[in-house]
Amino acid sequence: MIGDWDGDGVATLGLYDDVSSRFFLADTNARVAMQEIAFGPPGERSLPVAGDWDGDSDDTVALLNQRLGFIARNTNTEGIPDLTFELT
Image (cartoon, rainbow, N blue to C red; front, side, top):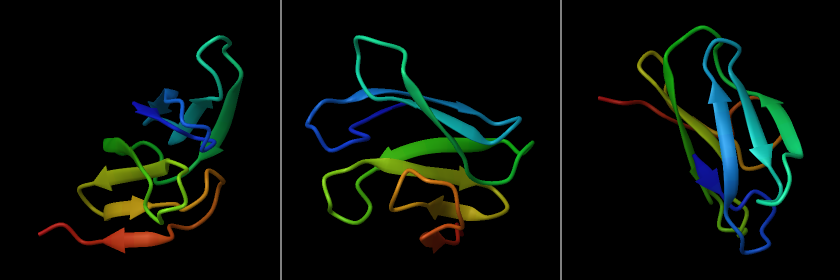
């Protein structure tokens, strides 16, 4: 997945490990400096999604999960979802 994690106008790489439910976000495309964020239920098959959910020019992490629906954060930090939508 790709996103502009720091709002600098440059999209960079993000990886998601669904076993541990951790995101690894790169700050630049020149190095492998990554931010690690735990978010969502570990061990469930979730689809990672990136987007600017609150219009602040920073892309943040979200998950599509069969049990929980769509859950998203407005910052790339650990915590409870800022947005939740059920999938029908």
